[in-house]
Structure formats: C-alpha cells, structure tokens
Length: 369
Ligand SMILES: [Mg+2]
Image 1 (cartoon, protein in one colour):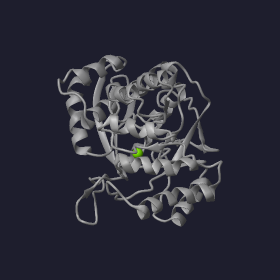
Image 2 (cartoon, rainbow, N blue to C red):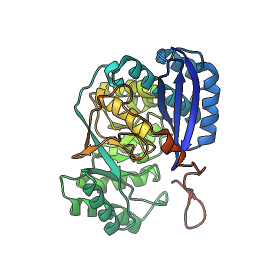
Image 3 (cartoon, helix red, strand yellow):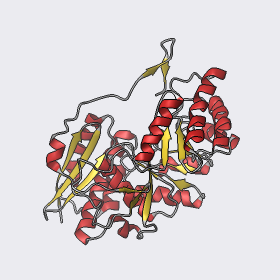
C-alpha cells in the first residue's frame, strides 16, 4: 500500500482534520491542534512531500523521519502536523487489518471509558446550573476554571471568589459528582499553593496546570506543597517533553494531547513512562471528534487511564457518533479509529480563522489566558 495524498480539512469551530488517501482505496483520518491552523496546514504540506509514495504501515519509521529528519525539532506546529499524520496512518492500518487500533497496541484493558465535559460560570449560581446541565447530559464528572485574570499576588477577595465557585459545586452537586479545576497556567506558584490548600478539602479529582509548563521545578514545588493531585501536559510534546515532569515528580496526572504530543503511539509511550512513576493519564482533548476517537483508542489499552476529556463525540461529523452511557463510552470495536466521517457535513462547517482570547489586567498589562 502507498500513500497518495495528505490533505487538511479545517472546519468550524476550530478543528483541523487530516485525511490520508492510499492507492488501495483506504482513507485514514487524523486531527491536528486547532489553533494556528494556517501554520499547521503549511507544516502538513511539508510532510506530504515525504509521505506520498510511502507505505502507511511503517508508522514508527515515518514518525522518526518526520520528527528527526528535518533537523528542526519540536514546537506546537511541527508536532501537531506529525500527530495528525500519525493518527491517520493508525486509522489506515487498523482498517487494513480489520481491527481497532488498540488491538495493535496490546489489546483493550477496559470495556468502557469514562468521560468528562467542560462547565463554567462566573458566579456560583451559573456554574452550578452548568453542572446540572452536564449531569442531565449523562456526565458524572466535569472540569471548570475558577480564575480569570489573576495577579501574581492576590488578596482575600479574589481568592475567596475563586474557591467559592468550587465550594458551590461540591455543596450543590454532592460527593458522587466529580469535578476537576483547571487553573490554565494563569496563576503564580505562590497563588497556586494557596488555591490548592483551599481546594483540598473539596477533593477535586485534580487541579490542572496550577502554573505554566515552562518551569518544571516551579510546578514540582507546588506539587510538594499540596495533597491535591496535580495534572499537566496539554502544552508538552513527545516523550522528551514529559520526561522532565516525571523525573521531577511534578504531576500525579499526565494530560498528553494526541493531536499535538506526537500521536497515538507517542501517547502510549508517554503513558508507559508515567506508569513507572505510578502517575495516571487523562488525555487532553478540547478539539474535534477525530481527536476524541483517537484518544478512545489509547484509553482502551493503557492500564493507567483516569478519565477522558471531550467536547464532541462526533454528532454531525460521524455517521455514527459515540454514545455516552452513565458517564462512559463503550470501548469501540470497529476497525481503525472506528469512525466514518460524513465529508458532506464538513462542507457545511466553514472554518473562520481565530486567535485564542487575549486577556489583560485592569491596568492594561497582559494576563495569561
Ligand atoms: Mg487545560
């Protein structure tokens, strides 16, 4: 089998799908990071020159060539392009062999996969209402932010406002309802320690990105100061990016994003490294449903899986979307990624270029989003 084309398909709201065609009529789908779409599509064009004419079954070899062969390594653009191609090649291989991808990665270790959704609200009432809506949709776990612009040191009002949001959810939704708090790298280590102290009695499943990922010792310092499980990883790439986090004992939960960390097999390697540190895995997935489908394949076959993020199970994109039952999706059984993309439906979702929000403090200085 030979690869004949590698195409990107950008669709609303911010999803970059990737399609690999072959000379035997099998088509594989992947997904890349949805931000910086034009640059990522350009990077895919660079990779296409290498991939066309190649055997799509040599996934590890192609990964090595794409990652190491260009001299310039790393970063979100190249890793997103590699990840999309890698996922699509797994889809092709699974379809050609008639098995789900996880079957080729050791086989399934679980029959169903737990999912969570995003909720939000600037007031306790709005946040609790959003959690009730999530529960009605079938979720028993949610994630939300509690901070907006947060100065490097804040006083009582900002801290109590942030913690009050999480307190309202625990109080209103009860102990059986799990929640995670995403600090999104918006706060300083000093403030992260205080917030984690205050959140600890509420037992969040984890607190995510208490500080930015670019300074691992600072993250490790927060981890040492708190008993709350700390999660990180959505802005890290490949096994090399996660190594330092593990060696510094800087997280209890790793969140590799398969559309940027290097793909499904790279996610498996990262999870295996985490396993050796008794660290669990909760793959990041705030983009499109092809990423959800790829994540499901990884979740099915790693022993140290915790919970899966999603914003789409494929409604309006897949001929048969995944179905949520009691907060879980059954481990898929169809070949490859187990999806059929409705390509006509993609044409009805024009992509509009956009930037992630830019936030500023009251005094006009830049804040982290
Ligand atoms: Mg996050």
